[in-house]
Amino acid sequence: DDDGDHHHHSSSESSSAAAGSKGGHHHPTHETNVWDEPPASEFHVRGPRYLEDGKKIVASSPAWRLVAIDCLRKHGKASIRDVGRSYPRDAAPTFIVNMMLPAVDPHVSFCFWFHEDASRRDAKFAERLRQFRAMSDKEKNEHFKVIPYLAEGPWVAKHALGSKPAIIGRAIATRYYVTENVTEIDIDVASSSVALGVWRIMKGAAKALVVDLAFLLESKLAADLPETLLGTARIYNFDFANSKNPCFTDLSGHEPWLAAGAEETVVPPPRDDDDAAGSGPNPHHVLGAARSEPAKPPTKLPGPASAAADPPKKSTH
Image 1 (cartoon, rainbow, N blue to C red):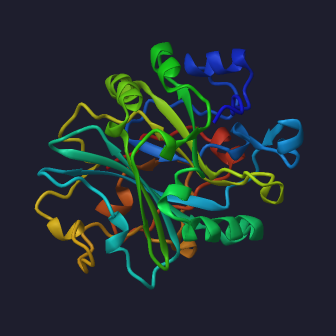
Image 2 (image 1 turned 30 degrees about the vertical axis):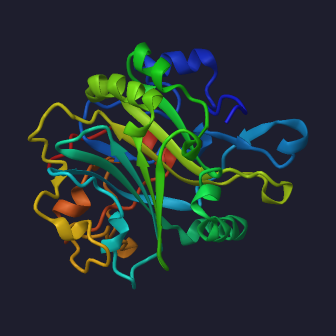
């Protein structure tokens, strides 16, 4: 996608954020292996008259909310894909972005789980998603878009990742798994030499990175504008180098996870229970916590103002 820089910061602000500034919405933390949702206002999307004037606008709240991020690991020949096969058919509608990272043994995937947010219901986006789900895989490849941003980290990583919107399916092998209540996108990062090069740089510096991602469906028709974000995610300082990192969910030995029509849920889907949501001061969630402690639903994420105002609290796992 060549429609320009997405991020709401000026170039000087971006530089200070990358250097670890405490300005803006970004909330620096030295915690490792935690996540939250960055403010939607940090991203620019195509505006209502984009096809005529090429102008972008500050994004509004995403239509779906992030409820969990997993880092899945599996030894063996089969890669981790079709994660949604284990998802209960009577569960809440779920959108899964499965980033299959360039690792052979063990295979590693980052899975982002989104649930529709009733408080953000957007009829136009709901129709866009319905159309997307009905498309052929080739058509889907022309619509799913990711906007990256390195909120904190060394310049070499920031330069490698960039901040331009990218239509993932044009450059990276992408598979889709769609059922009545699941939309899953499996992205094989290793299939692209460019993406592989970026990943090698990012992996080496991962423990010092704060990475923001926005996911959306590109609007190509005037009737579909302005664009709406599907969801956003921020990952803080993930420790890839530590093979004993407790945030890895090890799937080794669980072949049913990958089998068509498997009934066994190797990793429980995220709990979606707002009534039991916590309200503590810590806006950050431990990666995989919803899986390792399935009895405890993830806490309701605070809004951007609350997240910016409250200091981070060291998480325990």
